[in-house]
Length: 104
Image (cartoon, rainbow, N blue to C red):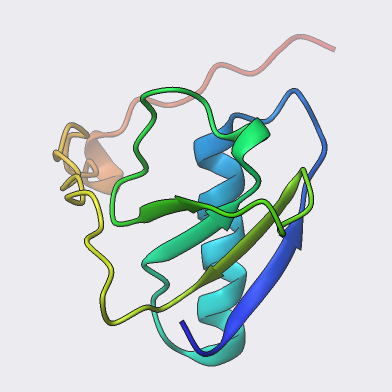
């Protein structure tokens, strides 16, 4: 990985996967390329976790709570999950039920 983006997120309420995906989204906004690799400190990598589309690598030189994301040609990322269409198509305007107004 030649170029990367260093992302910091110490919020314990945010899941690990979401932190990686947010860092990757910012990387894509900045560089116009999809990230496929994320380096983290070994102490913050949950056991057995995979992030779709990413190879997670540990390096002791990365500070805890920092995520270094980028594109590596030699990466072997986890398979991406394709979203399943579960939402119904939007209803036509005439067939939509009208909302009831609350009494004042």
